[in-house]
Image 1 (cartoon, rainbow, N blue to C red):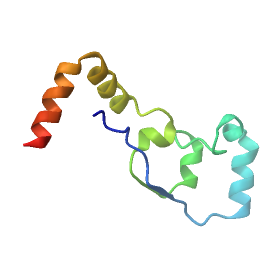
Image 2: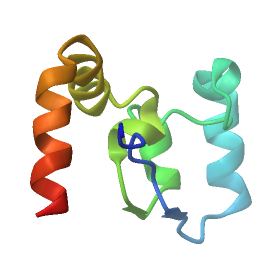
Image 3: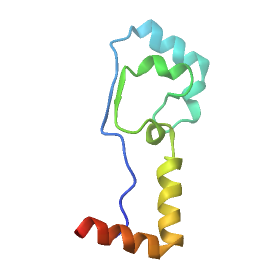
Image 4: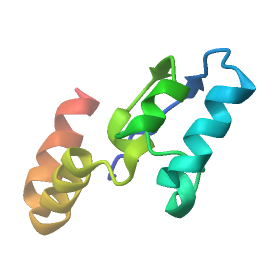
Length: 87
């Protein structure tokens, strides 16, 4: 069985002033982001802590995705891993 990709569990946002939020909005950095901010840019000031995968917050968790692709392309390896888990 293939594992699920990791996901972030939660984000902790700091208390910020309305002025700081307005200043960030005026940068337009978050205009094309699903969550309205870009954690990999200036929007990082809007996140205090991530519990889980940073890559998943940014977008596609590439490392986990590449491992999953490897398991799909090499099912013999996946079968060996499943056997080891059962022991």
